[in-house]
Image 1: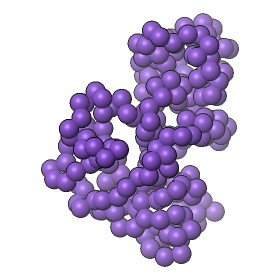
Image 2 (image 1 turned 180 degrees about the horizontal axis):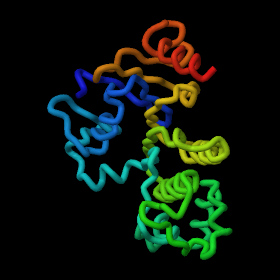
Image 3 (image 1 turned 30 degrees about the vertical axis):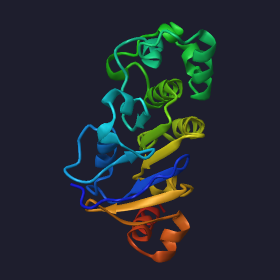
Image 4 (image 1 turned 90 degrees about the vertical axis):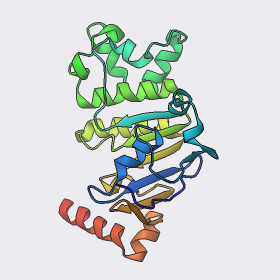
Length: 225
């Protein structure tokens, strides 16, 4: 449950949302996309109250890449196009390249290879790159990322991270981060705890203040070492 949460994500900037488990990070995304509505308060997008926007229009503003990349039991082509009929082969090839998804060319049926139930015919890294290609094609102004690389091996993480960097260029990006090493370059980091925003700033500013963020960093980096 969120309690008096208030923060602003700057247009064209990367804003990271961090905090311990149960802090309410995922609820922020649910509220933005109106999977749930707030009991009080207001959420605005570009100065407009999202409650006044048509739900379809609102959700067209977002592209989402999450830890569990969801794919349908359809071909890879259909998973990227998502019903769009206005995309030529050149545009499709460009988003596949930008998503580091060139592996598609080596599959038995190329783009017409079935992805399997929930994408089970592909590895985790491959599913993520197909999801990124889909998001690139969607070309939404706001990107929501929920720790998209946390479940990947090192080699896949490099490819997916490169593709996510391309996807986030020029977009307002909000990142839910569990591994703090992935958000040190964010324009702003919002620290949540028990449903509230308890601090915000850059990585350096938050470390210097020695609060919750600094403590979380010490725990993660000490355990990694």
